[in-house]
Length: 307
Length: 226
Image (cartoon, rainbow over all chains, first blue to last red; front, side, top):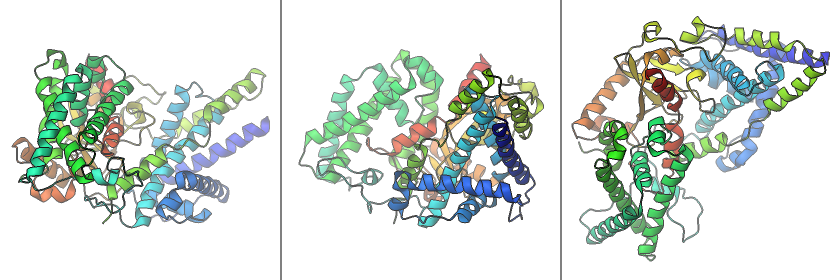
């Protein structure tokens, strides 16, 4: 068992060396100057996690990413965590150590070196996932900065399914003076009215709060609605699903763009109904301050700019 | 053109959902079994050495005796100013969320309004703004993800050295325009995301995840103010 203790000490030594080297880095440093053993340890660890992360969920294939070598993986990690994070890079390992020890203590194993080192590795893997994301964005050469999305890569779907994620991120705008669109809007309002009439206090509140981007996990929300956050999230998601399916049933022959427009019209109308109702409902009063703070801002998400 | 936000979100979700490589709790169980049969005595000093090596943030550094340190009083709280960027300590955030960076957007009556930066690099909707910072975790400000927090809690953070003068000015322009009912100012339109109002939009899931980032610090703040 002495060998296990020795192995733990050696491994902990690598982490402490990395942390010390990290602390001593200057903005112009281009390497950490680690001992051969420590560098080999982190090269191997980084390469293993890189391989695991890239092969899981087919990221390599789905996004056409290259597979880095052992040295490249470690070099990417260093570059992304330090060189490219001039403002936040220095705290990376303090944050990592603190999270790891905190997790170990929460799980009741804060005095076990094996457990703490295990949490270090888990936290390191989490940082590596951030790095892979940033690196993937760079590799794909097309992310960052753009705020407009398109229909160019729709997900595979059955023809009877609703619009794809890529489609609904679009603002389905058509000419507002189109007679057909006014019909769709009327239809949307009717669908919303029917759904609203069937909704209870919790559903109406959840729909409004989520539309305003107030977290349903907020302690005041949980206390006011008297349910756990996962129940509230499920409830809200179910109502949104109901809007989509009712709109599909209204006119199954409607083209996908028309379906999208109808769903948007129905959802906007439902949100507005919930908002009007909310302020007449005394049971909601503990949440008034949060909602009032969010209303002007949320309108920008629906209508975009007017100036 | 690319669906930049969606690609980033898909990658983010894929990576977040992966199981961790090791099971530290299982490792601890084995250690415990070893200890009960009289093996291993070296753990405590090793863990102490790791713990001592941390440059603790703010309030924690004043009391480095362990975690779950008592929350300091407002009088003890370090000064924060509008425009400060803070890296919140894991003490005041959930362990399963990413590192949380916030911009201090208002300070009054012993509290600060903290606005979270997004984990993604592309704004999701009209209430997210590209900051102009080219650093992971600081590219987009989630204007909607803002809460008042007692100053005592903001002390549990590492300061991030950034020049935010221009960002704070943009934020003020944005807010004034919205409150006046004029919508998003034209000069900021290129820096925000597209509207969000389809009930089946994948961005709703993003708002659920990001919305949980500041919940722990909000909960601690409510406890503190009771």
